Length: 224
Image 1 (cartoon, rainbow, N blue to C red):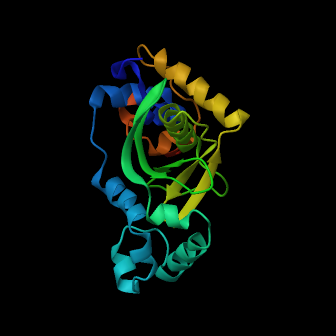
Image 2: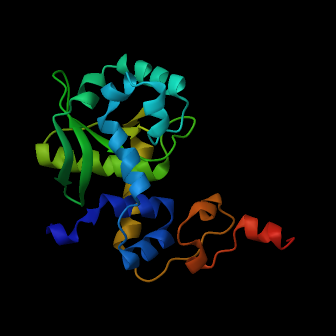
């Protein structure tokens, strides 16, 4: 498939969050905010941050107290992926698969297993697993890497560097089905999709005013 027809990883992530958000984002074509890119950059500084003093960590865009953050990185350093996360085979790598294309923030090449792409999120992790937008994006990266390498890629990693947390996203049946569903949504997007109703997602959406959705905070201010 020509590169122009491949679906972007970022479009998949937005559509997984809200198809209507993707519709507005495509029209705006905005650059990511500086705060988000600064947080993503933390993923390339783990060894430095692990030994950093309190003042340095307080000045960094992290969301945990210094001691808690260093402890999180110490736990991360005990995992088998640590060497790959801190010294990846490649960084910010463009991957092009059969259906989609985009950037993997890192590609790990373990000696005893298949390659592993990572996706870095500037936000906070859920209590368990990964958020659906990052899950879909991770599957897209794994499938694109598998297509390029002509080998099975059964898992990806999602990094939340502002919290020192890295989660595994395995390409199981449910996660792969969600990816395929969102891929169909993106490919058939033509005009603004229906608004979400009663969703907490609307509260933090940058397009909520343009969308016109009535958020809970607005309803409460009106006494409804």
